[in-house]
Image (cartoon, rainbow, N blue to C red; front, side, top):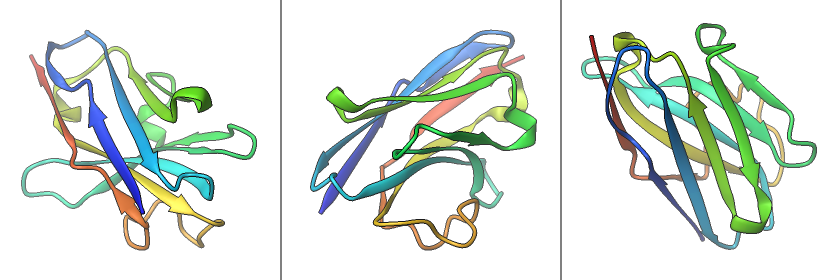
Length: 126
């Protein structure tokens, strides 16, 4: 079992920044990648970013490129999502999700992930 705990969300003014953290515990040695997703009220959960553990390769949804940075600290079993120049439209609950063992066909789809955190609320005021 793997447990994921997100933190770092909050209320910020437009143009501000936040850094989200996703701390993993348990049997994490088989982690292939950790993704960030977000879900706004009344909307489906959508892909934000991913980081692959074998080579720290990252990938982002096009709308986040240049403003979000995904990274990890293996010694702390933590993945970070640095979010800059925030806009009100990114307001949502942000989740991290772990994929174990190997890749999946469509890593941007929220289905098929082995473990999820409880989410952290990000609210950007205009």
